[in-house]
Length: 499
Image 1 (cartoon, one colour):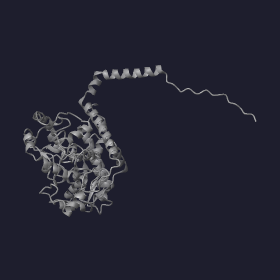
Image 2 (cartoon, one colour):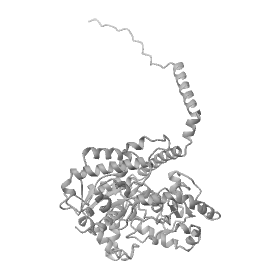
Image 3 (cartoon, helix red, strand yellow):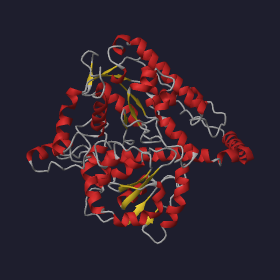
Image 4 (spheres, helix red, strand yellow):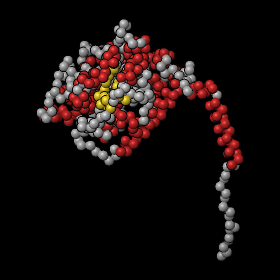
C-alpha cells in the first residue's frame, strides 16, 4: 500500500492594513475634527450654557449609574435581619407590631393633630386595611400605546424623581391594590403617562434652536397635552363600560411632568376638574400681589394644585442611595456632623434662587456652611457631604419640586425648606415641623438665628422615625412605604366622593 505524501503548506500570512493608508486616514480625520471645532459657530454652540448643562447631566447620570452598580456589588451576600427592609431601615410593619405590643408609644410618629389618623396605632390599622378598602381597576390602553410607553420607560432620565411616575403606575396596575374588574373596584385608574409622553413627543426632538432645544417650550407642552388627551380618549372608548361605571370623582390619574395639572388642559373636562390626581408638582396658587417673579406665577398656574383633591408625590427614588446611607452610618445619631448647613446644585437656578442665594452666600462667611459648589457633584463626594451635614438647603429652583429633598432626607440631614408655596408630600398626615425647618423666603436673612434656636437633636430623631415613609421599593411596594402613604392619600380623597 503506497502512502501519498502532501507537499508542506506554507502558513498563511495574516492580513495586514497598509500603515501608510491607516496613518493618512487617521490624520485626515483629526484635521477635520480640528477644523470643525475651530469654527467660531461650533465653538459658540459647544460653550452654550444649555449644551454644558446637557453634557453635565449626561455625565452625572453615568456616574450615578456606575455608583449604583458598585453599591449592588457591595451588597451581594448580605441579608438584613427580618425587622429591616432591603435598605436596612426598620419595616413599618414591624414598628406597628411594637406599637401594638406597647414597646413603642401610640404617639411614636409625628402626626398632624388635624389628621383623621390621630395617633400611630390608628395609622397602623389604616395601613393594614388599605389593600382591602382601596381597589383600583386599570382602564385598558391599546397595545400600541402600551408598547410606546414601554419603549419610553427604557430611556434613562437625568433626574431621580421622574421615574416615580412609572413606578407608581406599575404598582397600581399590578400590586396589591389592583383588581381585575370595575365592578369590585372602588375607583378607576387612567394609566396615561405624561412624563413618558413628553419623551415620546416628536416636537421635543425638532428644536428651533439646535442647542437650547424646546423641551421647556410652549410648542412641546401643547403637543404633550394633545397627545395625553388622545390617549385618554382612546382608553375611554376602548373601555367605555368601565369608564361609565364610576362617577368622575372616582377616577385616578398620575402626572409627574413639570407643568403639573395643566397637562390635562386638552383632556376630558371630568379628568381635569374631578379626578384624583397624583402629581409631582404640588405648588400652591400664588396671589398676584405676592409673586417673586413672572416665572413663579406661571409655574403655579400650570401646577394647578388643590390640596383638597390632589395628592403630592414624594419626588425622588433610588435603589442604592438609602442602602448606602445606612451602610455609611447616616442613621447613627451619635455620628458627629461638622457642617452646619450645606447645598449642592446650581446656586442661581430659577427666579427665587437667583434672588435669595446672594444673601445666603454672604451669610455663610465665617460659618460652617458649605454653599460654594455650582453644578453637579460627584456621587461619592455628594453623599459624604450630606453625611457630614446637620442641615441641608432645599430651595425653589426652576420648579418647586426636585429630588434634592429625597437626597437630603435619605442621608439624615435635616432639610431647611425655602419654598413658600410647596405643599409638601404627606403634609396632610405628618407634621413636617417636627423633622424639618421651614423658612419663609422673606425671612432668609434670619436663617442663622433660626438654626441657632432649632432643636437639632430632636429634629434628627424625628427624621429617623419617619425615614421608612419616604422610600419607594423598586422590587415591589412594602407595607407603610412611600407608595402606601401615597395610596392612603388617594383613598382619603376618594372617600369624599359621593356616588
